Image (cartoon, rainbow, N blue to C red; front, side, top):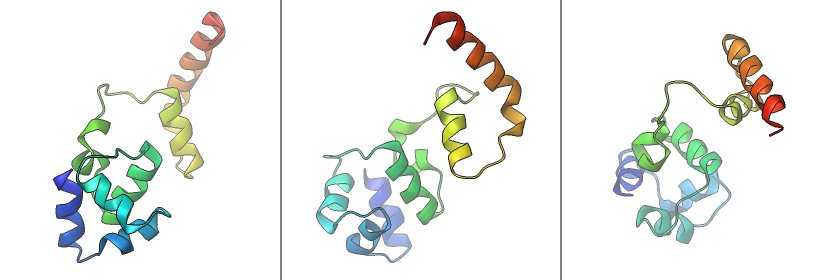
Length: 103
C-alpha cells in the first residue's frame, strides 16, 4: 500500500492525523500502509476523499470491474447526498431483477 503512504507524505500529514479522519489510530494507518490491513470500502473512500485522490489510486483492490455501478454502489452514493437521478433506470432494472430472483 505504498500509494497511501506516498499520498499522505505529499500532503504532509502524519499517520496520526490521517487516522483521525476515519477514527483510527496511528498504528492502524501504519498497518494499512504496509498492506497488513485492507480497510472497508467506506473507510478507504473517506481516506481517498480526504487526500483528494481516486480511491483506486491508493487502494487498487477497489478498482471497478464494471462500467456501471451496482445497486449497493448507487445506494452508497445516495447516502452521501449525491443526486442519483441519472441511475434511475439502472435502479429500476436492478430492483426488478432482485424481485424476480427474490434476492
